[in-house]
Image 1: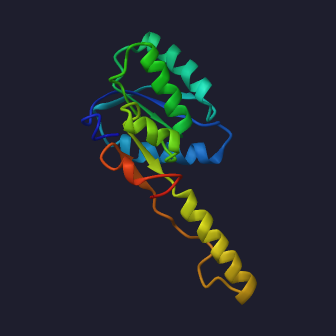
Image 2: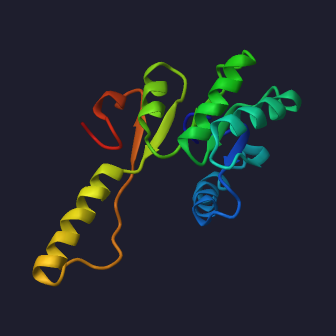
Length: 170
């Protein structure tokens, strides 16, 4: 997002449900990076509650007073897609929109020039790992792995979108 924005410009953040721990974690993660760039100016932060329809409505309202926004960063792909639709409806298709999750709809939008990027949480990999470790625990009494494990996310852009499928690499 920072690179796409050339480290400057007004942006909007769409967050998930405010009571959701994950929404807060994603926002903190965004701001751990974004706040280091003096040229990036947040003009609005709104909760769209993980909803595409709500994101569409919120962005429609936000752009009435902020037609010069350069980017929107969203806490999930569903909200990002709602933002893309609202921007398209308003003729502001050059606004940079990025999401998070790596959903098939987001990847399709990247391929067609809507979203600029998403961060893939490899849900398919995580699910396989969970099943394999559950099987190992049930058959051997231990997984041999630590209880808390880190799984890397992957940046999906137009340059590599064709390499991804259903929440993972093809």
